[in-house]
Length: 149
Image 1 (cartoon, rainbow, N blue to C red):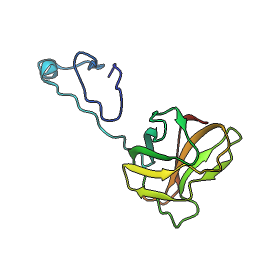
Image 2 (cartoon, helix red, strand yellow):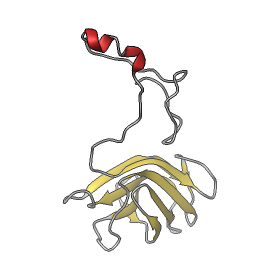
Image 3 (cartoon, rainbow, N blue to C red):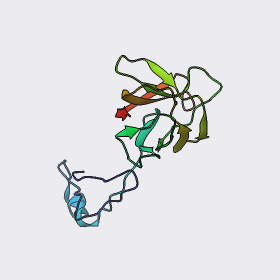
Image 4 (spheres, helix red, strand yellow):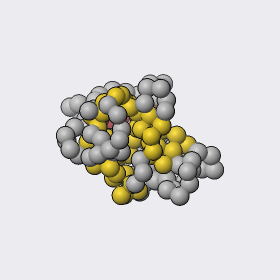
C-alpha cells in the first residue's frame, strides 16, 4: 500500500494512499476493485513493536530523549513482567550495552510511561523492549536511534 502514514493513529486517506492489487484477478475479483475498503492491521509477529517514542521534556517524537525526564512509548505488545530480570525496557548504546529503565509507571500492551534514567550519558541509543508475555521465549524489539542530550 504506497503512501506515507504520519503516525500510528493515522488513517487511510485516498488522496495520500493507494491500494495496489498485485495479482491476476478473476472476473469476480475484477468487479470488486472499486468496492475494496482498506484498513490497517497489526502484524502477527509475537514481539513488542515500538511505533512512537515521545520525549516529554522536549516534546519531540522519535528523535531525542532527555535523561531524568519522562517518556512515553506507544506501540503493540509492549507489556513485560517487571519482576523478571530478562524482561524490561532498556536503552542500548552504540557498543550494544544495555541500561535498564528502573521504574516503569505504566506498563501495558500499547503504552509504556517511564522516566529516562538520569545517569544516562549523552550519546546515541536504541530503545529496546524485551518481553515473554506472548510467547515462551524472550522477544526483543529494537527501535530506531535516539540522541540523549
